Image (cartoon, rainbow, N blue to C red; front, side, top):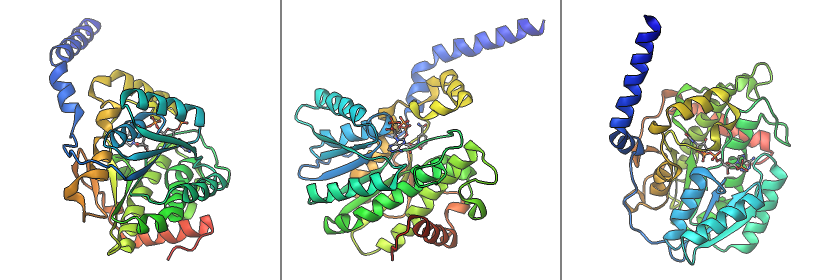
Length: 318
Ligand SMILES: NC(=O)c1ccc[n+]([C@@H]2O[C@H](COP(=O)([O-])OP(=O)(O)OC[C@H]3O[C@@H](n4cnc5c(N)ncnc54)[C@H](OP(=O)(O)O)[C@@H]3O)[C@@H](O)[C@H]2O)c1
C-alpha cells in the first residue's frame, strides 16, 4: 500500500513538473540585466571564465564591445571558451591568460604581465570558485576554498587596484553566494586544520567574499572605483563536481536551476548597469539588492579578516 501511494505521489510530482515546466523555468530563470550599455574601448577581466557563469559573463561583456581577458588556470580550456565566444560573437575581443588562484606566484606573474600589456581596467569580475572539495591546500598552504575563493582574489585585487583607480570609473564585482548565510569566519582555525567540513568551508569562503566587499568599499570611498558582491542563484554548472550529494540534488532539481547564462545576469548587471554607478559595498541577486546575513554586516569582522588576509599574503594594503 505504502509503495503504491509513494509511486502515485512521485508520479503526480513528475506530471505536475512536466505540465508546469515552462512556468517553473520562467520563475527559476530569475532577474535579467536590461541594460543596453555598450563597452567599446573598455577592458574587463574575468577569473574562471573558461566555463559556467564566468564564460557567460565574458560573452555578454564581449558582445557589448569590451576587450575581455579570460583569466583561467587551464589555458587550453580558456582558448576553447574564447573560440566558442568568437564563434557566437563575431569580432569579439577576447584573450586568454593563465591564472591559478591557488598559487600566489601564478597570481603575481599574471598581474605583472597584465600590468605590462593593459593600460586600463574598467571591470574586474572575481568569479572563479571551488566548492566542497576534499581537504586540499593551495601551493602556499591555505585551505583550498578559502585560498582560491577569498585569498587568491584578495591578492589579485590588491595587485590591480592601482590600475583600477587610474582607469576610474571602474567596478569590481565579487561572485559570492547565498551560502554566506551559513558561514562564519573561524579566526581561531581559518585554515580548518583542527576540523574540516567541506560545506562549511565553502560557506566561510563566500562570507569572506561579502566581508571583503564591505571593507574594500569603505576604503575605496571617493575613488570612483566601486565594489559589489553577487549571488548568481542556483546555477547548473561544474561547481558541484566535488560533491556527490550536491551533484545528485542538482540533477534531480535541474528544472529549478538557472542556466549559466541566466546565472551570469547579476554579474553583468553589477558590471554595467548605469544606475549602479555610485553604488558600492552592496550585495545583489537577480539584478536587485539582496539580503546579507548579520555576520556579513559586521565592520569589525570585515576589518579583522582584512588584516589577517594581508598577514597571510605578506602584503600591506592601507
Ligand atoms: N553554480 C551555482 O549554483 C553557484 C551558486 C552560488 C555561487 N556560485 C559562485 O559562482 C562562481 C562561478 O561558479 P560556476 O557555477 O560558474 O562554477 P564552475 O562552472 O565550476 O566555474 C568555476 C570556475 O572557477 C575556476 N577555478 C577553480 N579553481 C581555480 C583556480 N585555482 N584558479 C583559477 N580558476 C579556478 C574553474 O576553472 P576549471 O574549469 O579549470 O576548474 C572554472 O573556470 C563561483 O565563485 C561560485 O562559488 C555559483
